Image 1 (cartoon, helix red, strand yellow):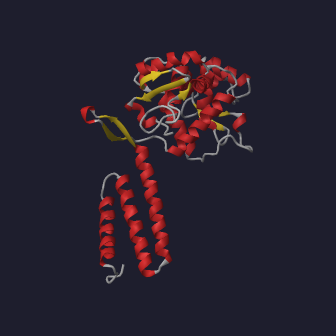
Image 2 (cartoon, one colour):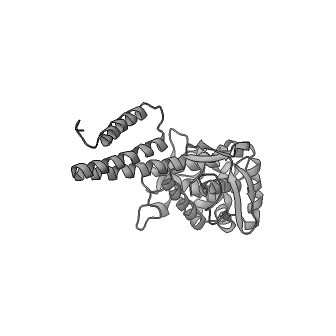
Image 3 (cartoon, helix red, strand yellow):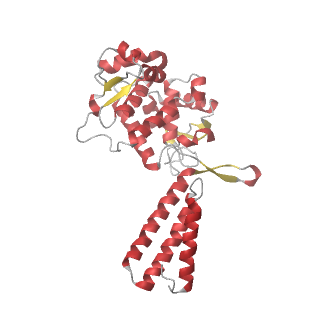
Length: 314
């Protein structure tokens, strides 16, 4: 930067910005709102600098700063939610989300695929299809252990696997009993024929997204309070579905909808529409939802703060 850069206010601003960025780098955690504001200041300063010097490279640098500001604002919005602050109203809290907004959109694509492509309309089958789909997406093959399978399906594991194999939705290298006996040091390599590479492929997410989605689903269906209450497959599927269809503040559904369509939730959970109310009540009892209402063909409610990190950011 030239020491005789004019106007003086521009030189002062660029020096202060440099100091502010260096100070931010010393923070233990990034402050995305602050970073966005600094990037916006940088964009304005570089635009002015370009006006003074006629340097097109500075104009491009200003545009990059604006893009960085937008990205940081998006990150800040994704991580910020509001909780009741008592008499003072609502207050901001920072939420460490497991999924980005784009990854959450990918997750909803998988959930829709399961609802329409599971070989049997059965909650346990849908749960197995979901978890195995997330293990095998992109290549059609994946590793599972007996502990994985029994953790997902509990006492119904053998029946469900037999059904998936009989329908040729799932292929095992050996028997179902051998898959159930497999251990982490020697997992079973399963194949889902419908997910082997072909065109058009049902999912477009990249290699790094698949394990993110799988880990997110595992945390949801394996939630400690759901396990403690021995929640069934349909209730755990509804827990996952509500998390995937949540706004940043925890409310269910798009603002213009005001909730989640009961028909779509029932199709994913493989239960009659009229049973969604019962499963939603169980989610309230396990503090997954703070409240739930199933009037007017919609499931309305809000995720409890403890599971906001699983929220899917509609």
